[in-house]
Length: 472
Image (cartoon, rainbow, N blue to C red; front, side, top):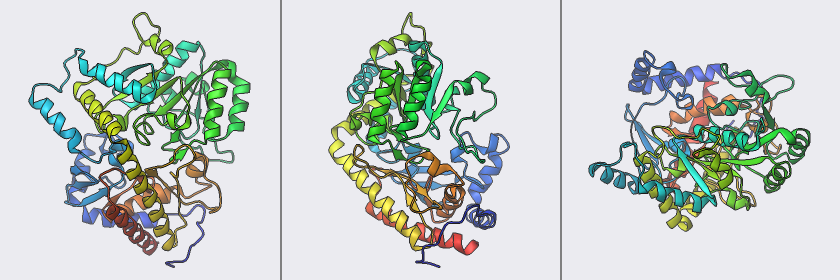
């Protein structure tokens, strides 16, 4: 009943609810449904990025501005996905679109295949704002993390890569181990996620538990002499928007140094999301290498590997690591967007981050209270900690044990611990029927969002919960 908090039940079958929601969704979105049928004729599953392919079909977006997107059926959808969390300023902000439009109008912006001074300006900004000595650009977060691991293995001459179970470091060989929890009596992240990987890759990746210092110390004691690097997110993304415990990250820095391993911070999501620069600075930690993307370019494809000069030198002429770039590395339009975005964030840091952090706190509180008021025992992640003093991200968790501490992906992604399908599939579809798009139950806030949008989010959560309950 509404207003009464019910206990989440394990292994709830959501098929009936999903059928009812899908039928209603198809009735109200005929143009997107038709576009999906056409897409299926030519594209695998109708698209090229799995997370965008909402079941039974995704809304086909015709335009996007600020906090909203509009689909082919004319629905104006309040969006908390925001370009994979890249859009700190919202969709298509004039701060970026206007300089890009001027560049294209003046005869620049597409790939020339030459270097220019813009690259130097972006490199100086990136190094200064992240505390790095050298930087090299590429075009995606996946490539950045792959090159960072290559550099670490090449620099140390070691083969083992340690990562956090549940952490996503892109679709590259060492990133495709330990992403999804393998169900069973002894649920584990220690397995390959894809066929086609060389057998040695899975054997060369060690998964550890986020925020578990004791386990980290044990694994370094056992394998330290072979560990090339420990790659982790200071605020883990797909594993539940959980900030790293300061003591845990300090231990990671200490143990990596002690054992001659490199510490890599994957800041593809965290970089420029919590401050105008690296999140590592909030912890007072300087990793050996770090990767950046997403918010750095404000919606344009740009990524970077940055870090120690002696390690990065392996990518140079005469170096032993083939990090030689690609056709779209330092793409002129992407470089212009990155320079514009980083300058804007740095110049307005004192206004932007308190605002989006305040909206994030309000959104987390609003979503949790709205779902609980309708009898759904939600817990929100993404809360600040002593290092990350404010947060503009969050995710919903429906734990079976409502009092359990949530500090690692095991508590967020294990179907034995919480109702994962209710969040990732059922709630997302029910919210779309309210013209609100969330990822993992919430997502990220931008400067384009307002207090009114947060209030609307809460209303949509209550309506979605009632819709789910009625369909059971």
